[in-house]
Length: 275
Ligand SMILES: Nc1ncnc2c1ncn2[C@@H]1O[C@H](COP(=O)(O)OP(=O)(O)OP(=O)(O)O)[C@@H](O)[C@H]1O
Image (tube, rainbow, N blue to C red):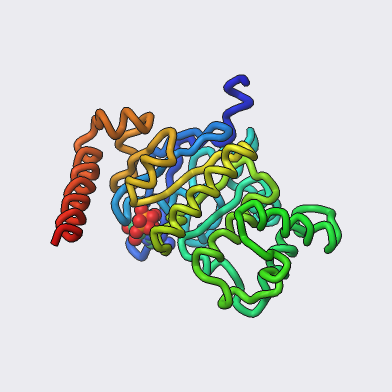
């Protein structure tokens, strides 16, 4: 497969500014990276370094009145930066999907899971309700949710966080988007559900070829899932490397600090287990 075909997302010279009382403040700048088909790119860095601002700008979900986005965001060759909200709504969910940290916030509490799932499918396709329901059921089977027909009749509060996150993966992946942005998809979950969600994300990647931008502060998750890693500090990329290179031979002092902090945390955990 040629580079042009395999390259699904290209971010070039991305800069995001927010308007404040004292003028414009830069939130992220000089952001460059690309994502190939079927690849997982990890995005790491301390809280506040700009991971979410970067992903929200790719999705064009930042407040257009208070923020400005400069640079280029090419999704399968199509420029997203500056696309009208109406057009962006067609792209989101179909070509680029989003999985957020807290699945409870992703669903409207007053509508059933089925209503929300089926409406999402129908807003991007010409399918009728029956066809959309069949796809929803199939996608829920794909993430090992048992009795999907019953689950579709449930309200979000009736499902556990882990189940909701799997429903969200099913919604995000059912139209086989070129790119999935997963922002801390496992942070709100217990260890078993974390493993489950990562397993299903990986399955979506390998079976549908979706590329995944995986944002996580958990370097264990990144080490397990990512092919390449981008490290951000204070709104800028400080290091970009193959996952093995990054963990075995980190170049930047900040990356070394992040990896060290992780080893110390692991030592602490061992101490707790031994105590
Ligand atoms: N709408 C906004 N207006 C002003 N500042 C903002 C806005 N959104 C984010 N910021 C600031 O931009 C910086 C980057 O925030 P961002 O949420 O991207 O960090 P993050 O790396 O995702 O952090 P975390 O891991 O805690 O989610 C932070 O200093 C944040 O306070």
